[in-house]
Amino acid sequence: MKRLKIGLLARIIIAITLGIGFGNVLPGELVRVFVTFNGIFSEFLGFIIPLIILGLVTPAIADIGKAGKMLVITTLVAYSATLFSGFLSYFTGVTFFPSMITPGAPIEQISEAHDISPFFTVAIPPVMNVMTSLILAFTLGLGIAHLDSTALKNVCNDFKEIIVKTIQTVI
Image (cartoon, rainbow, N blue to C red):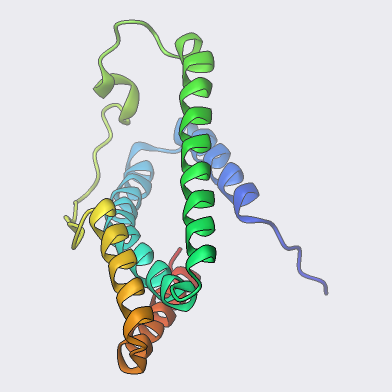
């Protein structure tokens, strides 16, 4: 039997749709299970994102660090994509959100599930913030490329494998 392969974006849209649908019809105690899972998963994502940046960007910069022109082009492409994404998000929000959100409503009222609290919460603070991990990744990557250090490069590649395995398994 051939297994149907669904892309990540399609799975996210399906999950959001199912969450909205089930959240309106399931009993409160069952919804609390999902709210609890959502809280724990959100904390884990906040923890792992800086490590993903560090684990994937450092070896990439180390590999292209000697090729100065390629590093500059890669940095410009990444910066341009960030600016484009930021402007796209801003203009999408300005265009569509005013008609979707009641003016003057407190943010707590529109962002949280009403009267449904998780069974428990787990605080998983990130090791560092995103910008720190990005700057550290660039600094380490350039340093590894400049020193031609195989020992540190191997450590970074092993860390990359751990991060990739974590993404494949958990996320």
